[in-house]
Image (cartoon, rainbow, N blue to C red):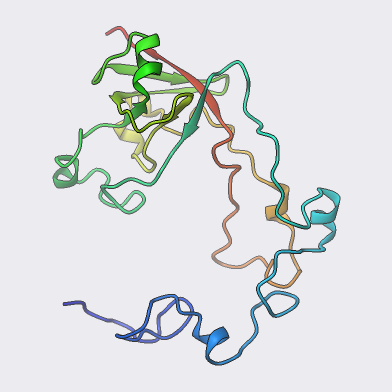
Length: 205
């Protein structure tokens, strides 16, 4: 069974054995307002920074990717850990290849004469890292995937997944003093995710 250490430690409500973890009890059952200006779930934000950047409503933007690098880099969650927890655990490493991998579409790999298990170099103008090629038909053409949260020491030269990524911070993350947009202990600015393009080549040992 499960050991419950704190019945009041739920994210949006106390913990109940018969209810979901995120059930929003405060809003749905106790009728307490959200921390937004309106007290409701809302999409429109009339903060001056959002207005200046044309972002008062969620809006699609053109990609920032560099055209000269043909592969869009993605970093999905790992299946063999929770973020970096257990990423270097020997038992979890046995469930996979045990080293950082770069998942590639078969056609993209064929064009570059890369085969499954080859060591490859993933690079952009910003930087590079090396990983083992993993050929997978489920990877879309024009993309390359590397599971997130590999530890730096698991990469050659300690150059990891973030090396070819500029890591731009959206100015919207810095807007505050507006309803739920407040700085706090758990504040964490998001990167502009998946805006990096790279290329990949086989490393000749």
